[in-house]
Length: 378
Image 1 (cartoon, rainbow, N blue to C red):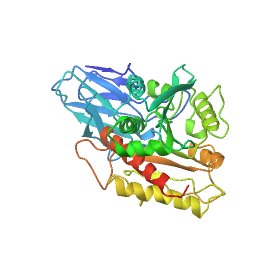
Image 2 (image 1 turned 120 degrees about the vertical axis):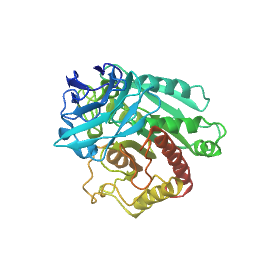
Image 3 (image 1 turned 90 degrees about the vertical axis):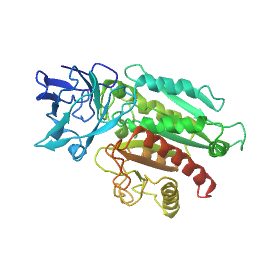
Image 4 (image 1 turned 45 degrees about the vertical axis):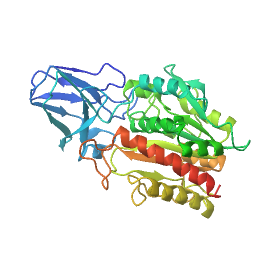
């Protein structure tokens, strides 16, 4: 038997792998950080063997509750990711599994590789609706890709709407969401997409944190910085990702922002607003309520009853993307959260929350944005 993780987004450390009944592993923390939870590894040479895999440090992860009632993602071809039960006892997560083939991959969620990201960007540029620029580079020298989708028709002064994803690299469902978003925008037969792009310029950062994504981090960049706590005064030498994107936003303008994330523990899709801003008012509340209620009507997986409790006015954390952007640009800015596990109200026993469901939610978010731009609430 052999455990490997030396590939894009791989993360695991082997303590013991001599006996199929006693495979002991540990998750490697993010570089220069105590955060850890993301894992991704391959088990080889164990076909038809009943394996007991223990992740010894699961209880010390950033969100240990994320491993309670958790079903691990596994795949034989790295295309189709299924779910398998796990157990958590005394801080140790156990996976009992009998592989059908000579190798099987396990991951915290369906991975989204840097190579797939490059393919997504390249595919986007085959459309006349899309243009591209590199707004900067990460600490590891990777490109920060900005896509602009727009239509040649519509008013000359369109709204500038932004969607960003994967500030936290282990939240790979966020880039699956982006893939769904881009596929909808590239669909020339979609009347909704055409209508939306007649009303706005749509700016997308599909991966805010390519270094953390490639390194197999949960939450930070190559310097151990949590990008979603750097938006007040981002430093070029430690978090160029935020520095460059924030500058692009200042140059272009922002009338709407959706920041796409995943939540390790909560089994819901939900939106967090910026109610903690000191200038929060009924108009801003109406904008937030409209978008959320519209999304409920468009997608059965989305709900508004559960999520993060809203902050009191005057208590906003301006180091976070949405609070800082709403404060700086006086616009509707929201955080979309999807589960690592599954949605409790609309569960899928085979796939759990999945890449495909993330993509479908993106379609609904675009439709909700189109309706929001028509609402007269801006």
